[in-house]
Length: 264
Image (cartoon, rainbow, N blue to C red; front, side, top):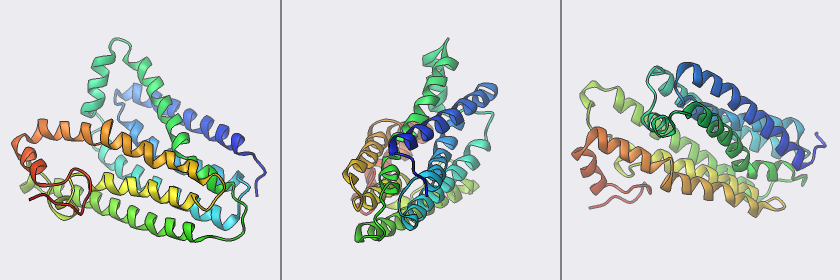
């Protein structure tokens, strides 16, 4: 059991995540592909999970449970992104190409600070994990069991959505079409929906711990990013450019986010 204060744990995690992002920036600079930041943004959460598992002073069973959840989810998403991004490593994704144009001629310097902000965001979003792993209460509560069940549903749903989309893209007969099968029949972004649900599960889990309400920051920030910033807006803009009228018809039929509501 560790005896570190929460502030020391935050500092150690911040140094680790920002250090990893500095190394990733060097790689991205060499290959001229900033998209690799997405992979390591996901992998940084397991790094934080391992730090807390080893150093946080909380109840061991609780630490193993929440850190295990964090590590599994981060490794799954990071590995999924790795398969997608590394398959076209010589071709930078559209949103990063656009940033490179907008930030010229000092794009690489600005990307360095962008990568560092990603590392900082890892630690900010890990607020539930810090709260939970400081809890020394030697029993699990109903909130923690409920959080785990919600997490299991969320990670399974996100993985299923990712597999369905990957299978659709691999089918040569579907080239140029919009994926509207499986979970994608009910939501234009089921993967994002279940990702947000996963962050909600961490919040529910944290409610059993002192200052657990602080953990609401994570699902709130993730929801804002998905709906307004880097998630849905960028994805839909790219889909409209590549699929045009077919994607517009899909937008008219299917809910943007909530998978159980289908239009028409």
